[in-house]
Length: 119
Figure 1 (cartoon, rainbow, N blue to C red):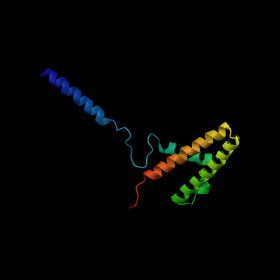
Figure 2: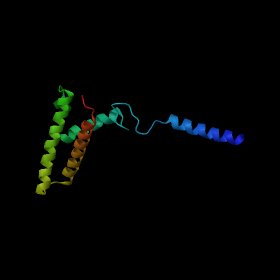
Figure 3: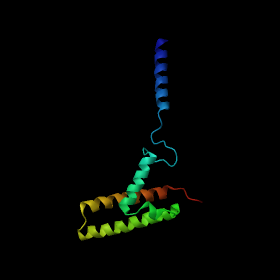
Figure 4: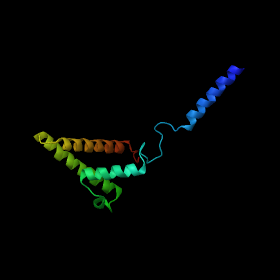
């Protein structure tokens, strides 16, 4: 009988520990996993700086227009940096910038592809 109590108690402890912790990957809609709102804002500002844009340039645009301007600017910079790479004049700093912008574009494309269609 005591053995059953020990097993039952261990099972309850394991369940309560499992239930109290959030599921890995669980997040509320609109949240980036592991990033606070302040961190996301800093990331957006850093991206704009990387692209040579200012928040003032995007002010007054709709979210779609803002996104299009950011992607267009990023695409232009990638083309410019790839041309430098082809000419052999790409610096280590330029390579880092190219990598970061390409990573952003790949992530942005992935988010768009994952968005549900309006069918």
